[in-house]
Amino acid sequence: MPYSTAPRTPAFGLTPESVYPAPRFDGPAHPVAPRAPGPYARLFAPPGTRAFTAGNLLARLPMGMFSVSAIIMIAGSRGSYALAGAVTATGLAATALVAPWTARLVDRHGQARIAVPAAALAVLGSLALLLCVRSDAPTWTLFAAYAATATTPNTGGMSRARWAHVHRGDPAALHTANSFEQAADELCFMLGPVLAALLCSALFPEAGTLTAAVLLLTGILVFAAQRSTEPPVTAGQDRSRAPLRIPGMLPLLTVFLATGVVFGALEVSTLARLDGPAAGLLLGLHAAGSCAAGLLYGTLRAAHDRPGRLAGCLAAMTALLVLPLLAARTGSVLTLAGALLLAGAATAPTMVTGMTTVQRLTPKGSLNEGMTLAVTAILGGIAAGAAGAGWTAERLGAAAGYTIPVVAAGIALLPALVLARGMTKAPRSS
Image 1 (cartoon, rainbow, N blue to C red):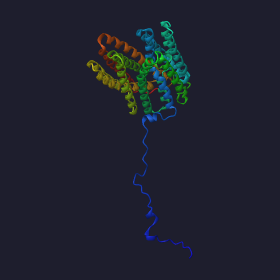
Image 2 (cartoon, helix red, strand yellow):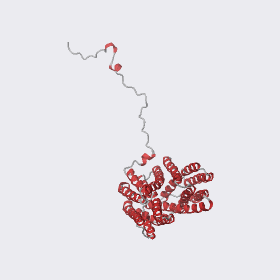
Image 3 (cartoon, helix red, strand yellow):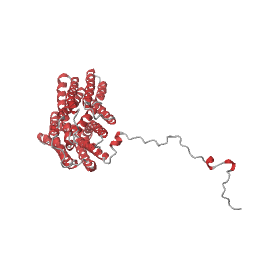
Image 4 (cartoon, rainbow, N blue to C red):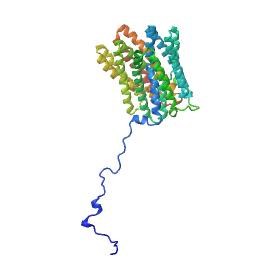
């Protein structure tokens, strides 16, 4: 029988479609969009950002180790905390003078070209101090050796400059970057003294200084090796005005100076209020509160068009600093610990907003110098606050020292308000 091409009738009325029906999609017609990455995921998305951050954190940790290590080393060898304090104060004063010049060289010649030799010279100063202490050298050599560490580059400022270059034109990412950097500052200054004290007590008195020197040089070498994220030095950049001459910079530096007084007075007052490891634990809680607040602040949307934001942060800081003052008068250590933790929550937002304002005011070609001036003002305030709180605690009692941070934060409000008024219609520097 010949083959027939006529369609055949399905057996029992069954068709392929009825046996194997086509799949049905009852969901939406378009696929669901993937969840957008968080602010910190976007921050570290560009290549090289994680590598330079690792080197920067490695180099920044010694900043909280050097002074504590030097005090333990010198006091243990010479038997004088007064001499140890004088040596570290000399180094702080030298840093205040030298750091802006180092930052200016970084802006003009590049981070890798200046930061590496500057860090190497600072490391040589630390090693010279170690050798002078070990060999019982004359006292003046201790001051000379520690003054040489003033060339230590401002790693936090260089890191912020890299973020500003990598995420240029993205204000939200820069806000997250500044928040992350402030949290890193708090973390390093919280862990650094603890690590230094542990090394000096568990190993030998010079172990803290030696470890800090190795970490600094290693971290700077790793940081400088990441050339893809380094801000380029462009010929003809606007350096006609030094950052100090920029309108609004002096009020802003006054804010940083007063904020430094808060930090120095709070530290000394806590040390005077308690003795032993408990004081370090309470100061660690204050830093922990600031670190957590900084990371959280980085996830929030920045209000870039509100010049009064810095004044608002300072107002919150002033209000929260009243808590340690009241807690210190009650005599309860637990209450004081909770008060310091809460007071720390205002520190990071204030510093993040201040550093963001520095970036807004400072020309791009002088960014490292502008941020180093801010750090120098903070260091000067810390020295003044520590001295004032020590004098107050010795004559009026430890609890009275907590009045200085409240007064200093309130004073910082005045230049912040002046700055807000001047920045209302001021364009951002470029």
